[in-house]
Length: 241
Image (cartoon, rainbow, N blue to C red; front, side, top):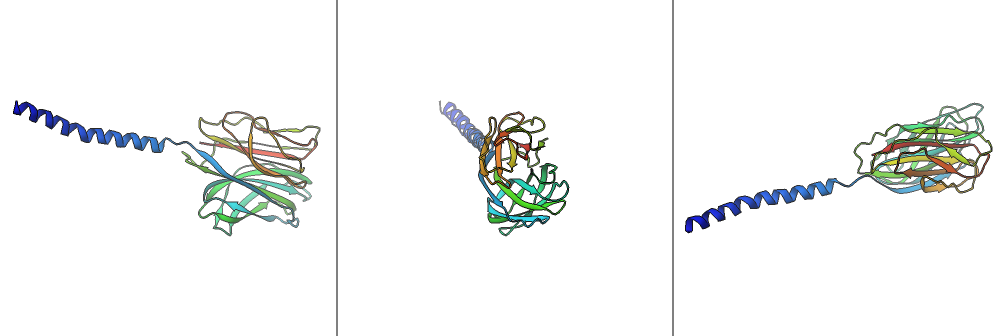
């Protein structure tokens, strides 16, 4: 009888550590199972860029990996692209381009950049174009967290001339993985609030010279936004997961 009780006790002692390890494993999985989040969306516009090749826009940026939507009103004699963007003031970060429009003379277009801001706060985002002539520039930003990769998937972009339409569409669809985010820069030369049938517009600053907005979607689709008709408009999107 004593031998039988001893065997039972030894079995229980052997099982307890295994169960504890299993419980710890379950907790660890639960902690790592959280998907991406998209938060801290803000926007601002500088309407006094002095027709230069660079323009600073000041706004609050969160610490961490951020996506930056940029709009530019181009008053140079030819087309431009947004060739660079950098963060200063709060901390220093050189941003990477995901998508950009080719913006015609006297037109408005957008670009999408991304990068990690070491220390957030009141930051200056300096926008650079290929030829001097920025009349106004806008920046909208959002914080992406819990990503499996900070490198975006294949995106889309389109710049629309001032034609009789109020619906401005990206040039193709973007593939958004389950739980991920497709993030879009949207902008045009109207102070009318932008809306969308398939994007959630998280933040926007309407301005007649160059409105800017940042929007997102959780599904594979061709992103679009709407506003006043007959406007120079741009959209640029990329997916993260």
